[in-house]
Amino acid sequence: MPNAKIAGLGFYVPEKVVTNHDLEKVMDTSDEWIQERTGIKERRYAKKFEETPTTMAARAVEIAIERAGITREDIDFIIFATLSPDYYFPGCGVLLQRELGITHTGIGALDIRNQCSGFIYGLSVADQFVRTGMYKNVLLVGSEMHSMGLDFSTRGRAVTVIFGDGAGAAVIQPTEEEGKGILTTKLHSDGTWAEKLAMINPGSHGGYHYRKMGEAVDLGYPDVEYGEAFVTQKMFDDGLFYPQMEGQFVFKLAVQKFPEVIQEALDEVGLTKEDIDMLVPHQANLRISQFVQRRLGLRDDQVWNNIQRYGNTTAASIPIALTEAWEAGKVKEGDLVCLAAFGSGFTWGSALIRW
Ligand code: COA
Image (cartoon, helix red, strand yellow):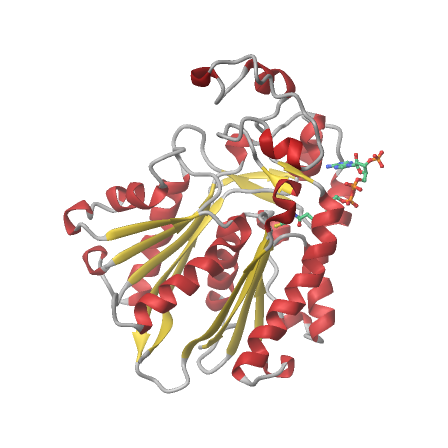
């Protein structure tokens, strides 16, 4: 069986730059607080009512397919990872197919809902499809538009300051080169703390999961009828449709799981942390990445960080960072590249790629 490789990469971030000082104007926060806790200086926001996760993805895809030496028609499968889709359903995979003008090809499109780990989950799926010979040009994208759904009042500051918009894309193809390409992927999850980092409304939970977590929040049920339960007045009044996060809880688990899942991948292929040439971690928080870097004993130039400029773009963060690292000449032929992510679910994973 051939290995699968990343044959082309591309990314797109919207033009609009939103600095920490811009956020200071709408909520009680400070540039100092944000930089000290997260490393973030600025992030990008998509153009309202013009750009969407699908349109941003298409911009990234154009670059990735050109670099992979293929045309849109050559794409034989789409995998789309996002937590901020254009629609509740259908997913962004089919919307991207339409945006690219390749509906006539009838190719399959799969939507991935694994938040910050979405790209690694998608990469693992693409890897299996390509190695078995089922597909030869899998298009994998991660794209997010957080700006549309954040709470810009002081109430939402702990979450809102972290996230930004953007898209990244990769073309996965088979390679005949011995020992090259994706060496392994590791995927994990633990749903025990699903609501610790979540956007639970609107949803079909009927309040059940909230109660299960011991947080008896009255969502306005059960007085509403079936057809009214999806979006309630209570949700609007209390801002319950914004993402929620227990930051310190997430932080503690992330710094444990990142090194663990990287080591697991290394062990599987018989390599050590000294063999890693470039680590591209999901851009959750600069402090998390620095912690992981220290644990692995990597130099500054062996870890790609761009959260300072883009914030946390969840499923888009790894492909954006990987593309930037590659463009900067930091990912070279023969290098061992390690990708790792942790996020809502909780889900986490890693990938090792011999470039
Ligand atoms: N500006 C100013 N103050 C803020 C703030 C903001 N944007 N957000 C929260 N605060 C305040 C809190 O209200 C709290 O005030 P209090 O002490 O008066 O109650 C104080 O800062 C400390 O809040 P806390 O939540 O304990 O801060 P923290 O040190 O844990 O930092 C995070 C918050 C979110 C930066 C940090 O927990 C984190 O990065 N966690 C991981 C998040 C993550 O990576 N998520 C993505 C996973 S993929």
